[in-house]
Structures are given as structure tokens and as C-alpha cells.
Length: 146
Image (tube, rainbow, N blue to C red; front, side, top):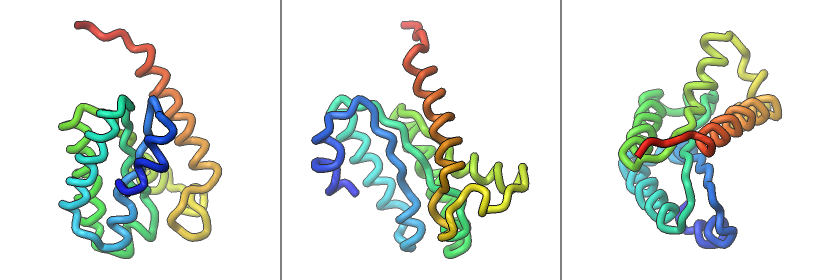
């Protein structure tokens, strides 16, 4: 993922990067710890380029939570949360939101995922876009005390 930064990220000179991270590592059964190092390096590079960063953790989806030990996903979510806290960047908790839709609201996965049981559908992308837009607008207008 870092190999694509120069071409896919830095070439656009973004002010803000929304970085969805962790799902592929879990899906491919990759060790969790090296992903943490990649996130740290990526965030450092993004900050050095002058971009603000929001990490977005994995999706709560059958292919992510069922294919591998559920603890792998929990460890990845915790790792991303820790990285965001330690590096003083924002985190959008997509995993918690989607789990809330499923377990608390009782929505079937088909209500917010495509038929592949992995990718979000138009409804869930729309919800997340609205929540992210609100959060970005709030952060951009927040008065900070120095």
C-alpha cells in the first residue's frame, strides 16, 4: 500500500487523506504487527507532505469477521485505534458503526453490504459519507485554545 503513495496520493497534493486500512491484512491472514509499522510509516509520510489524515478501520462484514479468527479483526481495530491516538490523528470507527447497524439495530448484512459480503453498498457509503463530512466540517471550524 505504501508503494502506491507517490503515484496515487502525493501526486494529487491532498490536504486531507481518508485512509481505509486493515481489511486486506485481515482477509489475507497477514500478521497484525507489521501492519502497525506500515501505518506508522504511512502516517509519518502523509504528515510530512502536509496532509491531514483520518484513519478508517476495517468494515464489519462476513468476509472480514468470519473467514479468520475474530480476534484478528479485534486486534487490527485496536492497533489502528492505538496508532491514531499515538500519532494524534483522527479515526473514523467504521467497524463499530457497521457492527452497531448489525447487532444493535438488527439490520441484515444485505442492507449495508454488496452481495460479495465484503464491500459496502450505496446506502452504507452514503451514511458514512454524511458522517465523515459532518466530522470534517466540525473539525475544520473547531476553535482550539492555545
